[in-house]
Figure 1: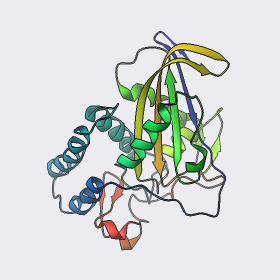
Figure 2: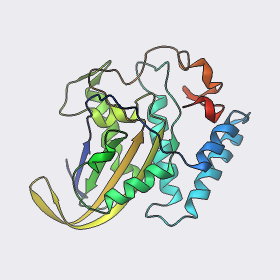
Figure 3: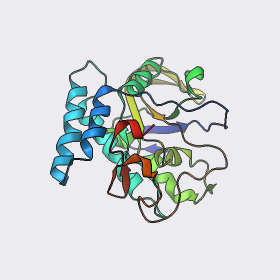
Figure 4: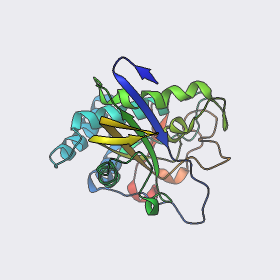
Length: 246
């Protein structure tokens, strides 16, 4: 779409089913959060736990700030908690450093396409690119959320694309990692953009299985696996013990 700030485009990968198992790349800090989160008795305790994980990430050299990580993760989880019809098996999404690193590696190529191809059978991927300025990192992913207007449960899309949104709200996708890169002379849909900002978000386990619904309808957290041993937080199921989650 055209805006006063420039062009903003989005792309997502719609994966066909395959016989291999999806693999989540895990970081030690998110493992610790999974164990600790069940012990958080108040909202303030929960916020302290998530902030602590994100602060540990900020100490690492990266092209995306801890503030942007919080914004992207918070946006995803708000979207996931507000799906309609309500989801019975929606999992709470956590930041994954391995996925963020893989997103950064791909974003550094400054290519308007999904990849790398060998990793696509294990993870989902949403892309967004803009030629103009943006005030917040979430401006780059808002169009993904807007696709909800064209999505009809369980898997019907009345617009040109709904797969950014469905990847965001895929119930079993509980890890995300994103990266942002400034690109020069980037080829986008038939034209060369002198300056561009590319956002890559990688997801595990991947969603968008053809013909499947992104989640199950029902009372929030009513159809999550009993083996998780977790709790319900804002209509999403949080894993209480790491080994029970995968």
